[in-house]
Image (cartoon, rainbow, N blue to C red; front, side, top):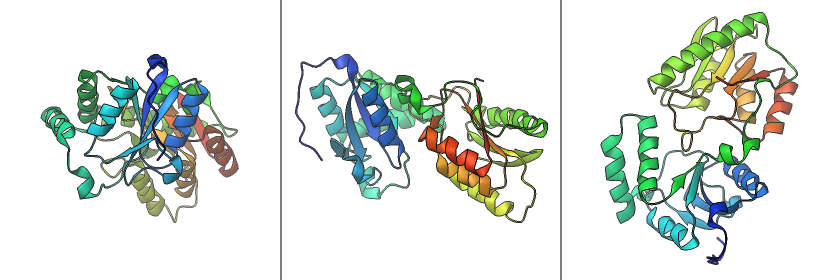
Length: 281
């Protein structure tokens, strides 16, 4: 962890705190924000962030108080959340006083994952912070233009599967069940509490003896989803899993779905013969 130098004379409008979870997304977000001219302060979540990230500060999940105080000292008013969270160590969940008060407010309003994300944002906003979506500040983190992003293009049969996948995705999303679905004429799988990666593992196992490659994987924005905390994402691992599941392609939204290392994702999709379609809806 680096020595923190407090400089209050900088333009606070271009300061942002990145709350970093696991995997590569925090690296890409930090670097993209810096290229876009932001003064980035990285806060690593203990037992989740990659040590190579070299964060400016580390906190545990239940210990947000020090980060809040430091952000105020540094004049940081904007916060963004990126990176995956797995199963936390119980000791990390022990709340400090600030987090305990926040949790009581969050639990009071929680009705599902989406409502929890909204509650977290409201708590931080009442403390004078603005929670922002990283993909809005650094557009390179998502597909910006609708259409086919790869060499391979969907067939007529693929387009029918895409239409069905969008319909089902919106249905389960509206019920706050999940954001991902696999369709091959019929609905093969939907995402629930296990998350997208585990869902795709089920599909890979289910279709391991299948010879024909068919069907699509869709990861769509849920209706009313708060994209400042709960952000859909795909990466090279997603492409590999889709290929292993003998599916033909991937469907995501433009601008609201993180593409972790976009160039690498497209390159791997082209290599494996997977199409990627980005949609504005």
